[in-house]
Length: 544
Image (cartoon, rainbow, N blue to C red):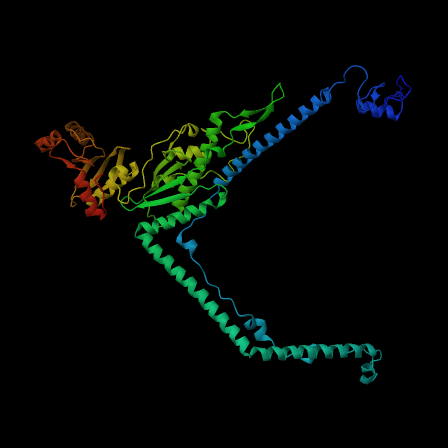
């Protein structure tokens, strides 16, 4: 204890901490050194000499901070890897085969449920007999002994008494059931059961009749019936990826017997933009971004699987071959955008769908050492098959680069410009086939039209071999194009040529065909095309 000048203690003390021992180690852990002052002014642990270093400034705290940052970095990287795993799982499930949703698979079957009291056990139940409950008599020790001696066995008597009680109980229960079977309550329950079964049978019959009515309407290519069946099949195809909403709507055009599907694509942020996180030399957590090309490829791989799944569902449900082709447009709809963007568009006829295996094999995602979980865009089987169908695919979805839709499904009565290339070719073929031209052979086909050869029967309205050149566009057909058609007729050794357009012919083209050298060339303009559609197909085509 220290004393002041007047001899009174001043409240401070000098603590000499011995180096060895328990207290010395405790004070060292608390940051105190030998010779510290402990008092009301200095405070516990305040050194008498130079100022002690602040808590947390030592090397141990820096190591702890680095460890915390490393743990947080690992946690964030694990979260990013979970997003990659979810995407890989979505890619796997989006390629699973879809179940056919044709009319046969939707039929319901009625199986009557018997009333419990009328089951086979209840009908065969008879009155309990004593013979079924009587215990077996005990064996005799002496075969020559009288039977009465065996009946006096005490064990046998106990078994006999128990058997009589059991028989009487079963007999009472049997009589009770017989009495209840004829009671009004049981009769009411039986009648209610019969009424419920009749209602079930009637509901199944009515459903199957309505389904058969829809089937007749579908075979007659009524738009409402075709669209209803298509959308049920498309909704059933989504069951494998219910956590990824990708609705698909269908519009059927009877003029070309084509279904136009509008598929809503998943958001762009579904594909992870990072590979993980790392610590920089300063100890800060920084994200590690993925190459933009890899992210775009992963998104297109998912889009390709969703598009192929929708095409397969539409193709599988059309068992009556009502469809001549399918057009699919994949739309990206983002909040705040001016409008949806078309990122993929497919225009496939029935023959192309039949030739193409729409979905990849059952296990296309085996990890390989050279490429990991994801495959390159040029090697991904779904994208390859989509491009084999002539699909237009955006090169970069994250740059919002749109493609031109093959066709739009807005107008109830389409114009020629609203049709896809396959639709227009199918329309021209249907019209001229019904006019007498058969054995079609398409030589060139594109968005603007087609060039084909056809044969007409001698007794038909269009006999002989023909070269058909059909186009759609606002520009009038010139005399130069008519002359080109005449040269094609000579090269194909045909007898006649037909130039068909959705627009009109220029005056020089009309004057050229009026000449003697070009009388074998025939012209059909937009008005004539619409008249042919009304005459041969019974369906309108607008003048747009």
